[in-house]
Image (tube, rainbow, N blue to C red; front, side):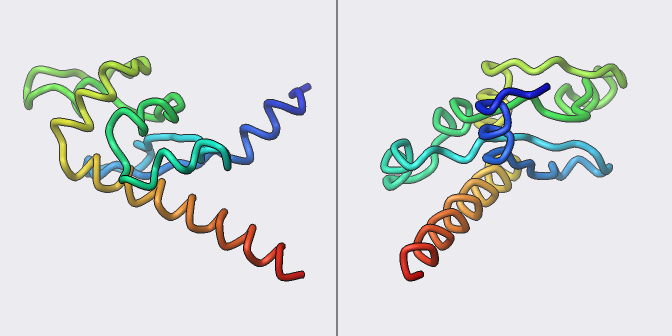
Length: 117
């Protein structure tokens, strides 16, 4: 049975689909806690995304290696590899930033709505 902490973190988790030409390939992240959010005010960086990353889903060698080099084997999650990929693939960085931005804004709106009640 999942602990309360695991359930709490699961509720903060979200995924963004990667533009790799097939379904089921997603980067996963944790929305920052309220105390972590001020660090995002200056902008979302690769290091902030990596710090809040969860294991990805469906990523294969063919998705990360040059054409003809990688196979269809799953790539185990690695934070250093994620940082390299986000820095080298602007579209992946963009969708990750957009997902994080949407999650933060939705949480802030939820907090604002709750404060009005």
